[in-house]
Length: 523
Image 1: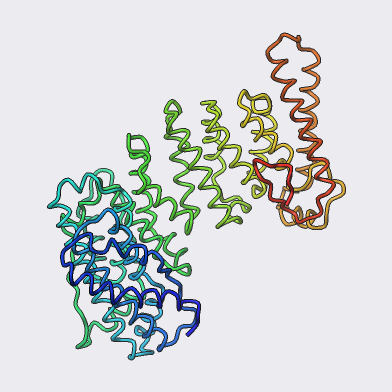
Image 2 (image 1 turned 90 degrees about the vertical axis):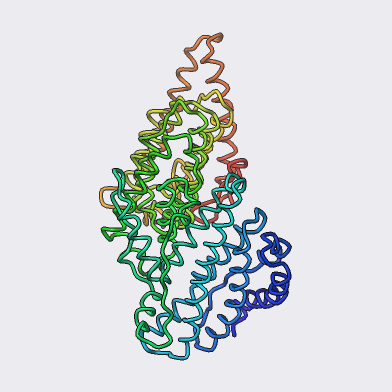
């Protein structure tokens, strides 16, 4: 067997026997597993690189033994130290990628040897649902615990519940039926009920077998206890569905009508949440993270919420939004750079959000914004690049940022002017490195020449700087604008000399990585 996933199996094999004995001797003690948490968190779920029947059977024999003990542990009750971690590991066991291979082979009649493995998987899924039910019942009995359970519990619970629904047909139908039956004036969608899974396909294939394990599990009132609103339930099911779907089926799911309806319902609930005192609700935020990771186009709908439903008088919310947008854009850049380069990002909503930060004139929000742009600008292209660089930074708000009262805002803006205003070194556009030329060539589109655009940008930047110099000459010495402008110009000129020095030394690739705090370094 490959060594890639051996550490996972070794860790499970080492933990399981002692965990089994300890839980046996501490029956119904919710904190019994606490002492094993340090060992359990070392288990990393590594996919099987090569799928063979022998490897699948061996792998799942170990996973099943480990999973069974985790089910037992959560059935004992809630522990603030361990329950959320254990539920997360159970969720990983339920959705471990190898079960899809097992299920596919069974549904195609290619390996009856794996049937016991699949049946054991389903039995443990049923056991997990039963253990979750016991956990919720014990939480309900201890009313003081309910108030202290973090929203992270709800997030993990929602993912686990959704993962189970892709293995248990009756649970999937129950989730779907529940949403239809509980339709109210804000509900317009259902979960992606039509989306199947290899496990559901295999289950249907063997339903007539004498070995078939029937499942009759349905959501009851207690299963909604972790959700404080219907919106949290919708967000949890949506997040679970997005994370569960495979890459090959992700696009077909995203464009299906029922899934789009479900997205729209999430959006309606998120608007209500964002306008309420619970605007920082992590359940919605983690659902949005899932969108960014696997369906970035859907995140544009969330951007519209923040663009049109943000109260700019709530400074705490504005600062949070600036930090959140910075994190989201960084994630988009890391995972889907071409999504931005190909102009799929909703630039109009982003511009509206940017103007909210500018209107509040909050230093922290503006610094977060400009740091975000330092990361984003190398990936903006075409009209998006024009709107941000030319219209926003060089025209509308050039003087505002250049002379800003906050040093960190002014510093970040000057970093953009020197290091991010063009794709390559703005002072060397007439003598570019071959890699820089290659970059410009790759960014050309119909009616958009990237190098010509950057040449115009440099021309406009120099015009703005010269205009400020001219204004400075005509200001009175005691004018407060003279003091601000002179100080800003001195700092900019000093940094420009540093830039010119480093620019001459630079012989690297097309996209130098520039530290915000050490912008003079070109790596």
